[in-house]
Image (tube, rainbow, N blue to C red; front, side, top):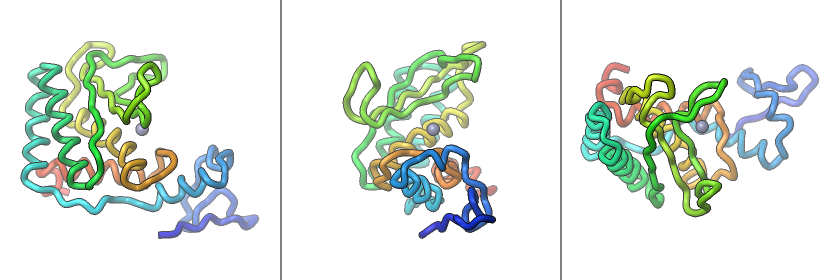
Length: 191
Ligand SMILES: [Zn+2]
């Protein structure tokens, strides 16, 4: 799908459907703008949930309250592996850590490194934190699953959609919600 950017005097800064472009869009290179627009134009993946995916998601949701990092990491990895397998892309490593890092802007839920972390260059890596910054509570299972789908969305931007970069476009957040829906059978039924 092609999304046209209006460039006439009245239309600067908005897309053909009237939505505003973020201010940073105009600071991107032409190539990066094309990547951004492509990201924004895709709202789902060609993916059907199956019993195995749903049971792996249920296993992760059950593992969270028990608070065992190794089990949570294994469960998150298995779910990521399954989704990658369904998408026919190579898998991405998922690492689960304890208390979320935080600063005045808030706390970090997860992060995706396309080429390994800065201290450890290598294959793509997702890091998820399983405890809140202030109270050190285990993160709510649905929040944790959404964070995993968010970071997986970044990975799929590169591995599946072959984008040069992974932007937080509206399309990106729709894809994240799509992934959350397909691994949440109850929500899918009520949506
Ligand atoms: Zn993100």
